[in-house]
Image 1 (cartoon, protein in one colour):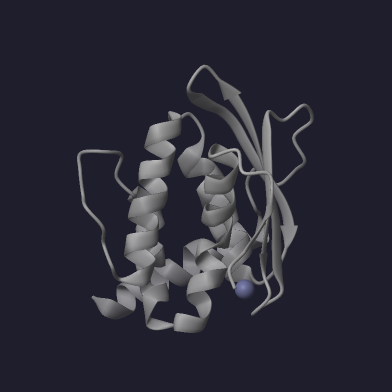
Image 2 (tube, rainbow, N blue to C red):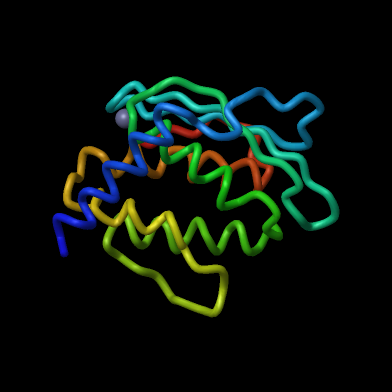
Length: 151
Ligand code: ZN
C-alpha cells in the first residue's frame, strides 16, 4: 500500500514537472504574488484573475525543483474555479496534509489528486518546496503585495 502510494506520488509529480499546467504569465491579472524558497532555490510567481468572489483563472511562472513545479501546476488546477474562501480552505487542508498537522476540518472541497503529496511529510526538506506555490497563492488571494519567503 505504501509503495503503491509512493509510485502514484512519483508518477503525478513527474508528469506535472514534465508538462506543467497553466504555466504562463497571465496578462491583466487582478492579483499577483511572488514566492521564494531560499533553502532549495525555488522561485514562483502566481497570477490570479478574480471574477466576483471566484478565481476565474490562475497561472504560475517560475523555476525550481520537480516538487515545487509539480506542486504549482497541481495548485493551479485545484484552485481554478473555486471561490476565494474555498481556495483558502484548500490551502489550509493542503498545508495540514503536508506538515502532518491537520487543522480543523470542515465540509469544504476535498484534496483529491493533491493527496499524492502526503508522502512529502516524510521528507522535511521537501515540505517547503511543496508548499511554496500555496503560500504564494494565499498571499495573492489575501492581496499582500510582498514577496513571500518560506524562511
Ligand atoms: Zn525545491
